[in-house]
Image (cartoon, rainbow, N blue to C red):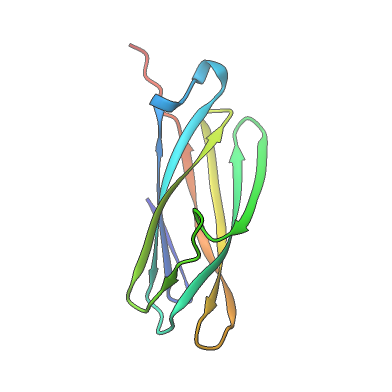
Length: 128
């Protein structure tokens, strides 16, 4: 689990390998990650966009950008939080992700970038 705070907004991420949905011999590794966004600022904020940098140890790199998270653009009041679970696929069992959210202060419409801290994606493969 990793955390980072930007302008009073704390982002905490934990990732898990999903062996039941993965096929290592076909180079298909599935990971889920849980994100908690805590608004410790004095402002009501809305998450507008996301930007992810996904690094795969198999030399694959991609950037994923879009509106909101899992189809939502949540409004988060001071002292409140928003949580969601999402996922990604890698071609290798080792990678990392990091990124940012664009937030808007509802009171004045100003926008700011919130850091999503880098976290590791590591497949736990067991041979029986």
